[in-house]
Length: 431
Image (cartoon, rainbow, N blue to C red; front, side):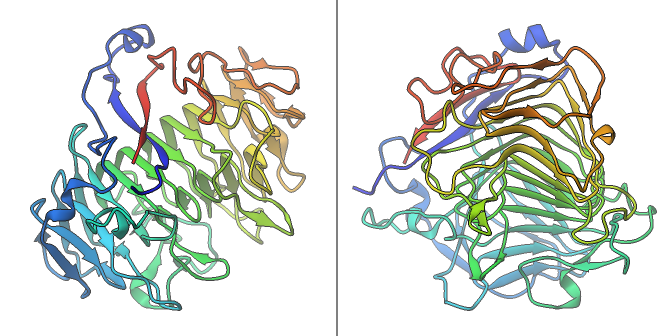
């Protein structure tokens, strides 16, 4: 049998029209995760494999009756729309050292229509879970990643920028200096799981699980899980796209990352840390955060400022600091390089520092309202704008749950006991 690794999945999401009280009592029994908890491979490993290596330049609809293999970097371009039906599985071809692989790019002007269901999601995963061989195991970097590029505003002086992780080619540029396309739609991604992404081309050149570059607010991101990635889970480079019901789990670098003037809202979402996964480092120290928020890597005052709004977001680290794979974790939320944050009705727990605002960002430009903060050594950097009804827990060796559930820490027994959660019903799976 393959070694069993743990991940998590959304089983249900309450209707957003319900009140918070009703959410707690109105969860459905639909399963977002359709993997077997006893079989090592997905059952879809028996399906025919269709290899895709050429760019997609006209409207195409894939079929859930096939497994699709991405060879190299495949780009949807020329204004085309790629439609992926519920239940479709996508993998990468065998990785070749020094060659980017298993990356699906939606270029500016093109669209993706990927709409799974709670019981039948679309899954981007390791080829080793679709090969019918129980001796092979999925691991971070087996798949490349999904990249969506748009024409919405970024704060780069040139107006456009090459997306990180890909070769210099005009089709891989994104963004604009104008606000004219801030409401642009690049399509819909809903009920999608991306796992084992982040194939590493070279040092510091990886692809995130889901990358959004200059994507407009007309794009729909809903019910997406990114797990076991070799880089960030979700990364937003500028743009105005919003995301709801997102889950990031056990990604090597940051679970969520925001840069280059991103201004949008992340709501009803959660990040889970894993003690025994890999954790990124910089200068020998941990660089792995629940969320990392930068304005610009060098021009800290560039406009528009990066300022995400977190509304009902849970950043969950570990119950304690024992047994964490080196170099460990950094901050629950890190705000730096001129960035700002609006933290609303959110909870941060289980990191060394809960909310850390670097000296190269202005603390008063980050606001906190109706939120709960904890850190093993520091709950929050002083000076943020306190809009009231916040809970700041004293430092200590054991992280509080803040009523996220009676046991929200992944590496502890009875993970996710005490459900339902305010907007989700979670469970961990073996595979």
